[in-house]
Picture 1 (cartoon, rainbow, N blue to C red):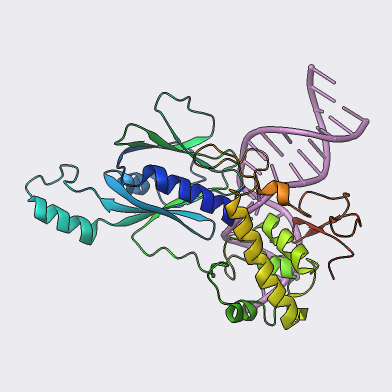
Picture 2 (picture 1 turned 180 degrees about the vertical axis):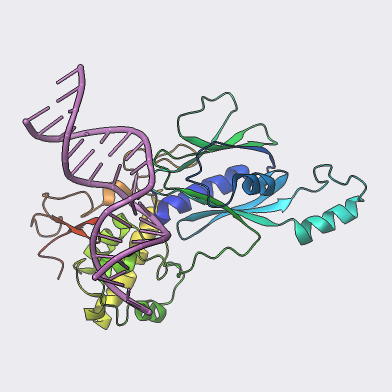
Length: 289
DNA sequence: ATACCGACCTGTCAGC
DNA sequence: TGCTGACAGGTCGGTA
């Protein structure tokens, strides 16, 4: 479901609402598919931790966790000072959530109905619950000590010359290169199509065949599309909502994605859809070369 | 090393 | 009404 702008929106919403809260206990459903780390390890890492910050890395949501001051009573004999020191030195961790295609993170009251496909429920000290719901189970949950790095570069942070080198000599279609998270992280099917349209480049063009000028335009359009989408809270297609249950509005700005057979907004030529690397790709045959 | 392709899952919607 | 097939915002691992 979510690409960079949706994940950014969700992470910001979570950061605003659960930072400084503490995870008291964790329930994990029996389905194993979404767990990259063992359930016991995830629960043990989360329980008793304070959420210090929630942010985004590529399409991953990252919870920075710290051992709660005063601890969970383990040991019990440590002084407050020792506990605080132990917390800062040893009890940092990161909880990584990848939403896959259909994953959602919701904050709700304990009384709220537990919907089908709820795989994890974290009870917070504030009395609320943080729940992970994922029907298709393409999502992934894992824990790391610290310094989680999914690889690739952030499109909104990378410099232009570094962006140009990412695609040098690659024979793969440019669309496929844009989706490769080991190169550029966070761009998915919607934003790849939208960026290529704005840059006037066909999705099937070999990356290596793009001129310096093509790549410069692409660099600009990728960043422009992502920034606009973040500003509008992402694209709501089917059931996407952010952490506050709000829909995004960037779907109203889509110029090619999901518009097969409709006229191009620039030249009225009908938008085409082809399958490339197993994914639907939408483009204007006249505007994109 | 690189590049395709199916597999992983469930849900929804169009068409018959 | 119900069945079937296509399709869905993502990644992996196997194979060529």
